[in-house]
Length: 535
Image (cartoon, rainbow, N blue to C red; front, side):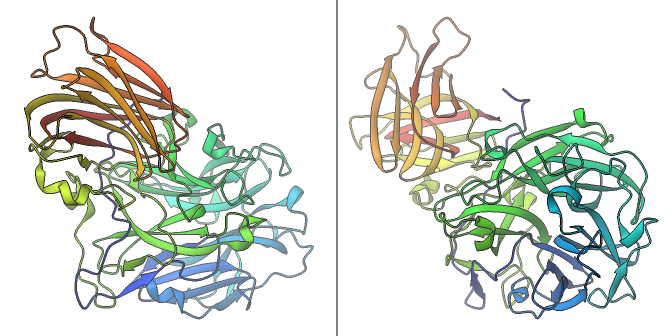
C-alpha cells in the first residue's frame, strides 16, 4: 500500500444545466488539435500549437476560453532546413510569459526523432505574444537548451516551484535515443534561457496505467498550490486510444530536486464511457478567477490507430482539494451540454472551489445515480462524517474523491440508529467503488439477517450477494469499522479489522475504477472517520 494521502473531497459535476437563462453553453470537443497549452495573461487566453496549417509554431488568442474554439491561428515561427537540429518534428510548444518577456519552449529534431529529439526555446522579438519569434540565445545553436545529459528529450514545461525558483520539467530517456522507458526529468533554471544544474530523474513509469503497451511518462506540467509543488503528466502509449491516462507527482518539501521527495498517484484522469485517451492536461482560471478549468485532448473513437491522429481538444471545470490536489473527475462525453466558464458570455460568477466544496457531499462523479434525489435525507458536519435519516430503499450519498484509480483502500466506521418500515431488508454500509449505475461494488451490514454482505453490478449484470455471519454478541448500536481493499479485480471486505471479532473475505469483480460512497436501505445510520488510501 502506498503512503496515506489526504482524503480527496471535492465534488465535480460532469453534466449540468445552465444556472441562469443568461448563461451560455458549449459542448466538447471544441476544436481539432492535440497537446494543448493555454496561458492567461492580462485578460487574454493564449493557445499555442505546432503545424496549425499556417506555420510550424502558431498562437491563437481570445478574451474567453470558449472563444479559443473559433479564434484564428497566427503563425509566429518557422524553422530553417529540416536537417537543422530543430528543423523537424516540432512538438508541444508552450507559450510562457516570464519576467516581462514571451518565450515558447518546444521539442524538435533533425528529422530523426528516434535519435536526436531535444529541447529548444524561442523568444519574442517584441512584447507581442502573437508577433514574430527568433531562436533564443541559450549559448547553443538554434536556441537549444543546455540540458546536462544530452539525452533524448521532449515536452518541456517551465514553472515556478514552491521554493520560488524556476525549473524546467520534461519527458526524457536515460540514453541518447528514444528507447524507453520515458521518464519525468527536472532541472533548475537561473533564468528563462539557462539551466543552472544537472538533470534529475524524478519518476519512472511502473504503474499499470503508465505502462499500457509502453512504459511512458510525458507531457509534464508543473504548478504550485498552497505551498505544495505538483507535476501532472500523461502515461502509457499515445498511439493506442484506450491507453493514455494522467498521473500526478506531489512534493510537500522545499527540496524539489530530490526524487525521493516526490510521491506518485493516479490516474487522476482516465478513459471513461465514450471518451478515450485523455491527456496533456493544463489548468487555467476562468475569466473572473472564481473557477478553474482544464484543457486536454481526447479521442471519441476507441479503434482509431494511431490514436493521436484522432485527437481533439476538450475542456471542463475542475476542482482542488484544500491541499491543492486536483480533482478532475471523469472526462465528459462528447456533446454533453456544459455551462461556459464563470464570467464569460453571460455565465454567472462562480464560487471559489475550496471554500464552496471543502465539505461537499453529493451525487456520483458520473452524474447519473439517484443520489441527487436522496441528498436531502442526509446530514454532515465535515468531510469525514455523515448521518442519514431513516430514508427509503437504497439512499446513497457520495463524498467525492478522485474516481479514476484502479486500486484503493476505503475505510469507514458505522453505527445503526433506527430501522424504517419501507421493506424487510434494512442495511447500511459503504460503496467500495461506484463508477456508474451499471458498475459498482458495495459492502453492507444486514441487521435483519445478521450478516456482513457484499454485492456488485458489473456491466449491468447483477453479481449476486455473498454473506458472512456476524459474530455472536454483535452490538449494532456501537460503531463498527468497514474496510474494502480493491487490488485490480480483487475486492477484500473486512469487518472490525484488528479485533478478535474480525471477519474478512474476498471476491473478484471485473470493475476498473470508481469512487466511494455511503448507502442505507430502510435504515438510519451514522458514519464517521471516512478515509481512503489510493494506491
